[in-house]
Length: 456
Ligand SMILES: [Fe+2]
Image 1: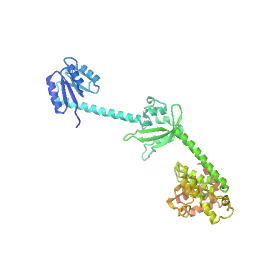
Image 2: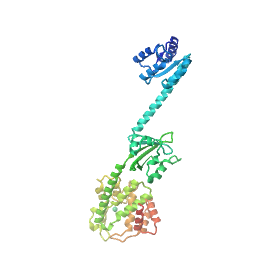
Image 3: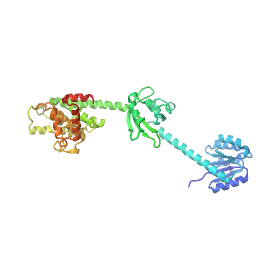
Image 4: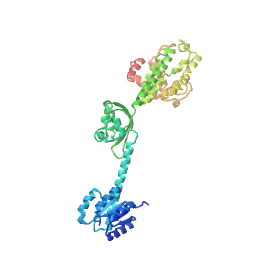
């Protein structure tokens, strides 16, 4: 059970002492009494009281002066003044400064207790609210990232110290004066408006995390990863902003290095097999177009682009005579050719790609019905990216010249994938590929790919 407050009653009137003590003790409060201000101060020095009830007219000091002294010593002590009507004006003046309330004589003990408890309750609610606000502010300040509270009309109502550092503006300059859009570069404005201003539309779920370019006080543009969420039961949102500029720069560098390495690998294969020169680039462009048509995300598309550029790297292990043989291949020669998927896998498997490149390369000749190679896997066992590469590879290869045959043409290539849709090739991939070519019906494959590559 919660312990009730201890009360010091300071009054030289014995009758008041007794009646207040009686009623407060009945209610479970611990009470003590003092007849003079000096006695009250002595008792307060010895023992802490949560509450003091002080008569205004004490023999040695005005009650309001004692109250000030007690408040100075114990700022958290709750102090009430008891007064005659004659001194009410004076007490009110004092109450405005220091007292938590006052009671006018003659006292009705029940009324005193009622008002006394009401005041305590209000103070406790206020205290809880204040504590909760302090906790909230402390959490807000220590989120570890720049954090802002944004109102429905985009005004920033709160920003933490890290938000000040990121933006170059002070809290006073930002809070309730600046809008969220003041920090967005013009190029990203439409995107941001869509995310923030229209996020309240029924049925629309704006993204909770995305990147954008943030402009600070000096005009410096920073890459920011933003996370945003609505505050429950309000129209405000809380947003954290992480500066990823350095990370972006090293990511760009890494991408450039990887692109250069991929380009080199692709050129090594073509140096070994000049007859398929350009094949991997064209397959890559077509595979990317198919993936876009199928609405893949940018990450998956990038994996498909890279895998396609080096998908025949395993051919490096084949004798040149087989690769450039002008006549039909024998069964033995064809079985050697078939090893290139596994060889490609073995060459690349030690590289820790951020995409499933190695798997795509291994599976690019697998077919839905299990008739492919090297592992004769079927259907969903073949990852979708490899099913896309498989289709792009066949279409490009059939449309192009080979040492042992002239180009079969784009129509034959499309006929091949259409005929074997859902048998050898994934239906959705075939549909996407046919859709691309249907749009460009009068063009040859090379021109289509050239044209499509502009939109990549
Ligand atoms: Fe291949």
